[in-house]
Image (cartoon, helix red, strand yellow):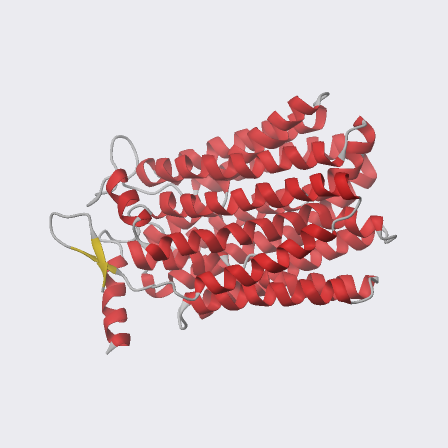
Length: 422
């Protein structure tokens, strides 16, 4: 009976208007945009030592800029989502690509910590809000049926993971052959490829003064979501996701070098995370069509805590690093498809980009703390040990808070914005 009810309720989240873009078009264009945007940002940890050594800055200076980047990404993601829901994704993606190029160029030639924070932090953070998951998932939600939505989100997340596998070694090669400044300049030009790809995501119905039909205002949608306990629990879990992945992604190269391993080991490790995350995100998205998404999320967070614990207990060698990177890769961004698919299933798709943006804002607060605390505590203690222990404890916490999530589509009474679980 409960299964039949859930299946019936899912039909409420299917768009009222016919699909405007083909599934292949959405996945190819959206996937390539995420591949490039996420691929570049996953390699920023490779610049930590070259930049700080060349400029004479502390690691905390670099870490603070990246922390601001994550915070700016989270804050801007809310407004990028609102604009994408109202005006369509195309304009938002183009603006994001232009900011990305400007930010990379500024990152390359910033002479002071303040200017570095503005460009590497503020500009790139805002650009990522318009070129990554929240906006792309809004397009998927509006153009892909509920029966394939979680799977399609898994494909998009896998594309971002492949970007990490592809771009991190590329960025490492560019740094070693061209130098860190010229490498950033090349990436600044490369990111402009996003603009023609965005053309493929122009949705009819968003041109001119047209906008999607809405049963709720932005204020009503937000009031509904923030009064719903499961939305708050998803935000809490996503906070932990941000803390863990950004701390590891930015600080692991320096952690390994401090332990006497070569920079190539870190580059290969980040590439392995990206490679295995292709499989992890695809599997998570596929399972999200068949299993409770909260159980998938709980498993991922518990598994992260176990994998990190074993990594710290094992002897540190290139082999153990590669095993750790492969295991973490399976769990890296695999939280993204079930989290966003759960939001779409609960609240529908009218304000999906905006609600995903709010949940992602929580993720980015965690990212801010993870990357900044990594640099701060290292400078204070000369070690990353305390932050590693925090990531383990947070993994257990996130696993626990996802278990009570209710994924059933809410029912709205006529003339009211309040909703109850079906």
